[in-house]
Image (cartoon, rainbow, N blue to C red; front, side):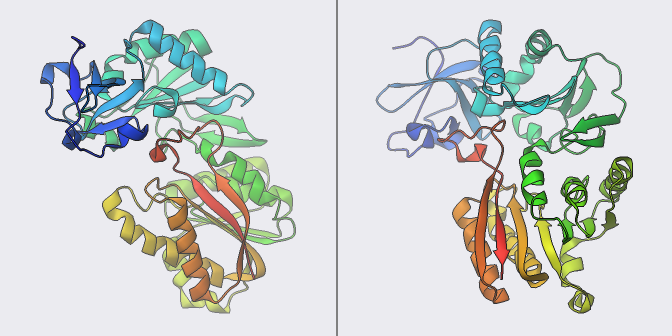
Length: 389
């Protein structure tokens, strides 16, 4: 028997950790450990006292244990350096705009690191890693040599770990917004104050995939954010491009990006649901290509049922607004929504729209956001390119 602090699963519990998932929930263990161990490394064992690995502990969170190693390990400088080095090695050849660390997929639970050229954006979402932020900053500086590191610790998920919200830079100096060239376009990036980490790196491959279908076409980019799909479509030779987003700030930034890159695209602030449902749309020309890239409708399992209705409705309206043979690029970034549920939503929308719909291409998050096969939550972005006849 190990003398290290140890959590034990309840008898007969059907915990996902037994099939490889790295999480253990509070209702799956026989009892919690002392609060003094919050943020520390503890072992977890099954009902037969077999070790399940080393993980970080937080009794304030529903997820009381997050595994970072199947072996007995210490979360010290040497271990963190090794984990970061392995994460970097997995992304060799991904360029200078990429996700460097993706939480449990890289054995660093609650740590996300994005690279934008010379600067890194770090998010820390677990108590144990919060206590090791200084080490993480030093190691990232040593391994990557960024000009600065921005800590975007303002995600509400931190509250579930009992952590405060904050945004700061390692240097202590404000990071001023600036132009950054990504995939052939200049983007005005506000990494310290913009949404998430300032730019959605996970859709970069999809921008190019959709653009291949846009030459000579009328393109609608719904939920356009900074306008990346619209910019790529316009440069490819689309005859008309319209981007919609409910956020005035996003629309202003998309217009600025279009002007800077000298492409022709129009951007309008609008609620996409209301815009597509407006009876006036029935008399307007239909679109050749529509992109649906909404924010997550299902931020929790309890919200999934309502989210499915929302996804079905938005896909139905989009199908109704496409010319015969038009392309619908539809995505979801809700990790609670699995592929079978998205497929069902699309099928229901196609049936209600009375349109014949084929899958042209399956879409997923890029390789720098690696999916851990035993952890469905690590796969959050999926979608389809659909031909709507």
